[in-house]
Picture 1: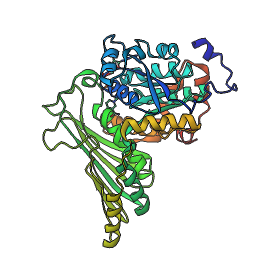
Picture 2 (picture 1 turned 90 degrees about the horizontal axis):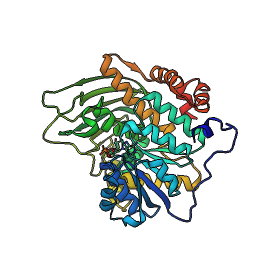
Picture 3 (picture 1 turned 120 degrees about the vertical axis):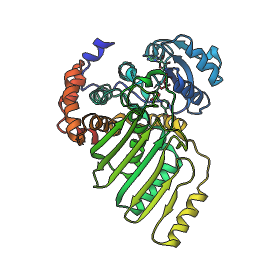
Picture 4 (picture 1 turned 30 degrees about the vertical axis):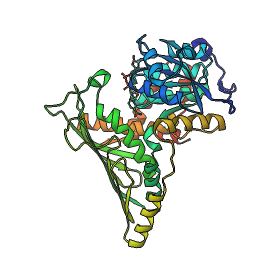
Length: 392
Ligand SMILES: NC(=O)c1ccc[n+]([C@@H]2O[C@H](COP(=O)([O-])OP(=O)(O)OC[C@H]3O[C@@H](n4cnc5c(N)ncnc54)[C@H](O)[C@@H]3O)[C@@H](O)[C@H]2O)c1
């Protein structure tokens, strides 16, 4: 498989030939931990996909996930090597819900096998690795979408519409606060709040405000009650590319008055403000009382039942494959959300203001140095400005 890719003619037609729109996509879920169980359940109940396999390094977990999903064990293959399993059962898509350190190897193997990947956040472990994944998706021609499930909340869409109509942006803040008695890979993870929760909010803020990051300053602390090995309480100030500010406060070390998973939002615009408690309807305010009443009435009336979270991620991915279009959170567009995590992490470590473009260019140098596939490396070497390459 490896030699086949490395000798592949870069001018050859993409390995991926599309998805049959007339039947559900055959899906293999790789990584059957907490998130993999949820994915298995969502695929099992989906009209756009069919659960045909589950893999995990732990041999007991696939059966548990099948049971949890209410699937028929006779119809779902199991294994430990997810890509091998996906090839054996003729999967159309691979859902990568492994731990972050496994995201890159599993994704690359799947792309090389010609199987599109819907991967969990964060895209991978480091920014250079993330850039290599963009290159691998380009070289193979096989789609790779990072599931940023929070984008698909109706309220996020409503906030985006309000923001577009009442900008320019001035300052936005999101506050996430919970307590976790942590276990598993997150216990020793570096910058666990930013990588686990911050990434969701950063991606949603880019989408809602229609802006990208320029620079960040950040601080982290390690309160005495924290169950995390690393700092899980962070505050960050981002400067965005429309000269607005975004401030983020996140903590896994606070008891009482916990926020919801989406955090609490306040969006400040030149011509209006919005607040969101993370689950209910957003609250809008403008200088015009009549307009405000009208906007709130519109939001109150917008109550059609619609899929959200990973149900919506799956629909977006399968729809994009069927229609031959780029999915909403394809890896190329996701890198800047992950860059916000990595820039804030570095800012917290150094105490310095981190300029995102400088970080991206350093990441490119490291990506070129680490990439062993000549075609993927050639893609990276062809980039001048990473920001421009990501925008293509
Ligand atoms: N979108 C969300 O709301 C959301 C919520 C929770 C977790 N997540 C993401 O999902 C991912 C998994 O998180 P989790 O909480 O389920 O972790 P987890 O530790 O419960 O499960 C991960 C599983 O992956 C398996 N695994 C590791 N390497 C593998 C490999 N190479 N092949 C097959 N299996 C492998 C492990 O054995 C483990 O069972 C993370 O990236 C996390 O950020 C997303």
